[in-house]
Amino acid sequence: MNVIDLGWEGREKVLTERRKEFLEAVVNQYNATGEPVHYTEVAKVIGVSKWTAYDMLTALAREGYLEVIRKVDRKEGLPGRSQVMFRPSPAAYKYAKPGEGKEKGHMVDWEHTRKELLKRLAEADRKGPAVLLKETLAELPHISNPLIFCAKVIAALLLAVWTVRKTAQTLMLLREVLSYLSVPEAALILLVGLALGYIWKSGRTGVTDGLNQHIDRYIREVKRMDEKEHAILLTFVEDVAARLAPEPFPS
Image 1 (cartoon, helix red, strand yellow):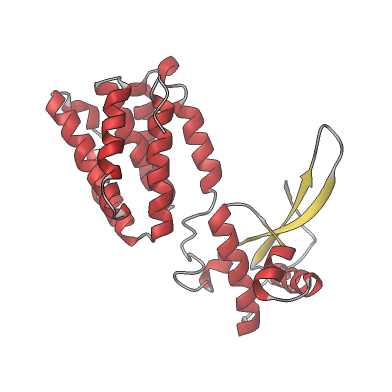
Image 2 (tube, rainbow, N blue to C red):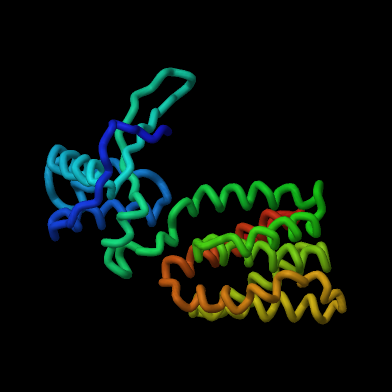
């Protein structure tokens, strides 16, 4: 997947309401998936022809609101066809409506980050959970994306629990307690109390050094998120627990 530079000036211009509608459609889709958006998807959302959508998105890219990406779909080693895709530039988030466009870009690159985190956690046995915990904590001060920040705090919390007691039953208990709560936001906040309480009860409070200072921000970010983001993080809790536990989790 390559960013195309067509020599456009990329100068921001005042947007009409019609152009904002197309821009928001791209921002919404990109924030929901973390993947560049094809113009036919925008055409379906707005109810216009694919050619109209392509022309409008191309114009928005020329004006600096979108980036053009060429994605090559390779199958079984064949060259494959390339597709012209679009993703928001930083300027796009100035015009996305709150609650629709996720003007802060909470969802940007989430899927990539999730995969990288789970891949890292799969090395817990080889590298040791304490080493992974230290690496994760070192990254927290530099993360601006709220969703990714909260996901890494969750990973750090469960790594800390795993460091104290390396048993699948412990993580399973945390997961099951959270499942009894009908409000996802409450479950994500309770996770902090359960994890820290378990660690402190073990007497190994030093495990959380470097983590406690990020808890306030974590709670603030969780409270600002919508239901979809809460659901994403709760699913991530299960993903992390399942990745750390050496034995299969019950369904």
